[in-house]
Length: 180
Image (cartoon, rainbow, N blue to C red; front, side):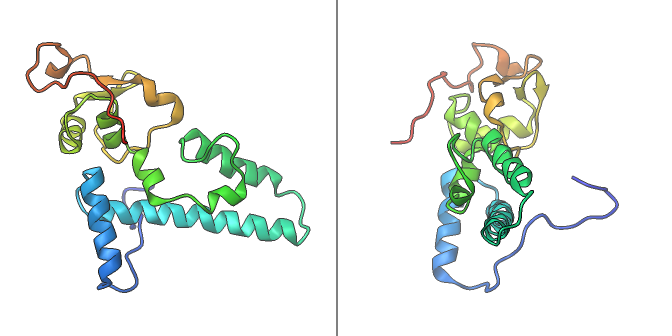
């Protein structure tokens, strides 16, 4: 998060504000992933741009013959593998093919819905914001939290929450949602 006294944006806005194709894609992502606004799409796009930029620089440096960059390349790839965005057999070239949807799938809001803890994506967001969801025993109230690969199976209802009771009327039946 950084120093709270020095606020800065964690995303870049589009260069041209009125592109019909881009706007339609963003609206589709907002609807498909239950996002609050396009700003959340822009954050994911900025994150992808950052990793692509680093990957391109590392690929260019290795083709020029620079040595000693293997540690930095493995750090980038391990970070993306830990978050489940990159496959286990991925390399620097596969970092360039990461899509926005890969990052949006790793958000806590999407994971709660996919695991069947909520009936809809909007309800998943509401459960998270209201403090009904925990990860590894800690309450998480940020829908945009990126879930690591090891944390996926530890997502559950917070024990102090009324949602932890099986008989709660808003609680979804725990059937994982499968895209198909």
